[in-house]
Image (cartoon, rainbow, N blue to C red; front, side, top):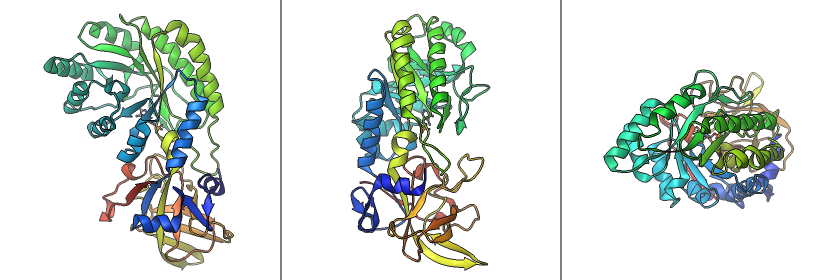
Length: 408
Ligand SMILES: *Cc1c(COP(=O)(O)O)cnc(C)c1O
């Protein structure tokens, strides 16, 4: 997708990018400082509506809140999705603060501490156990609290998902229990005073190939049907993972949601209703829900020319936006879409390199990009910033103040 397509998604007003209904300079004045992150409520709602319309009714939508844990965003989404997936004790408290029912919350991730497991069992959420040690801790917490913990078994599948930005299943993994070991695991813990509600398979993140994700979901259901035979209770929870990607570079194409929806409908009508009639299928998504509704807004501090190359130095950088600098798991750095947000309709007649304010060559936000002529105090906007921005960046690096975050 090209930068102008991202501009079109937000819209323009008075020659400026429109975010949350406001011209960008007005929003910047309202926020009071740069740099800042802004998440557009209207775009977020549109995305959830589109998912709801496309996906089969029976499939529950879970928000993986590590993508964007801002409490206002989580609160807003709690009323619009079915579930929240958390990955730490703090995320668990934020999720429960929304008023969501505990049964609608799941907790995944290797290395949950005994304290976090205690929190999870006390609150009555579904703990997605990733190892024998974890289930022992869950059982101990249940005994101590006099409660029957609800769990799902996270399975490391015997297949890998190709094309994922980050692979989290197949081969040896720190995630989940290897599929071939699940039968003996279930046998050992079937009568241990835990309620095994079902299974969770999450095999990868940031995938833009709908056919590959659909194939992974088909194989996941096949695997769960087989593993279900080993349980003494019916499967009530099948978390099929997610991994739906969003286009970051110009070469990326948006995911074909219709292909995924059709694949899920086949699973719902076929093996899920035939073999697992008591199971609620769940899709858990982070960046696909929130990624595209967010921008990171920086102000130009300096403009300089070095041996023929023009630099815009902005007041933000990789300390708030590690991924845009190319240092968050990318094999090859590619520019994120960016624009000069207060000169949105001017012709793009200059090539500039946008760098952040940190004293390291890693702090590169846009390499040789075409923009309208811009100078000091103009606002450089980076798109696709609603997920894995602020909380996935090294904010303490160089000791600059934290950026503001607004939900408009
Ligand atoms: C991080 C994570 C997600 C969300 O991944 P996205 O790429 O943001 O959709 C979903 N499930 C689990 C278990 C995760 O760890």
